[in-house]
Image (cartoon, rainbow, N blue to C red):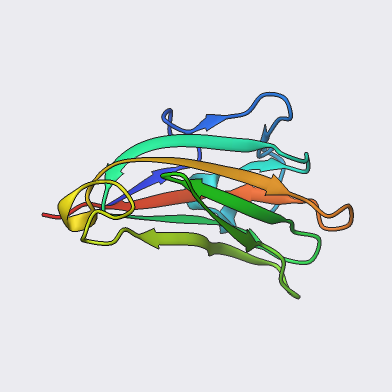
Length: 141
């Protein structure tokens, strides 16, 4: 079973310094986003933390020129990623993880269980923008 939550989901703990900002109501592209909201940053090491229960997670945001790299730490493992692309695209999958069913990445049998995640902006000085639009979690039925 899948559960989708907006970027305003209270369990998402955004860093305050370096910080994030929410989408301004005047942004002409809000209609392209889930729930007409997003959180964005251009700050090095701005992050959000999340504890969740599930067997998979999918993180969505926009991609485009000037968009940043990022790193994701989960259950003490780290993986780099990028939101950079030649054209602007909304509601794009930035990162996902289906947890192994053997419990080797935490969570226990079936991959479902408690997981810790830290998503961090890693700009390169030219490509700095990173935004988070929504997340989807999977849990066994």
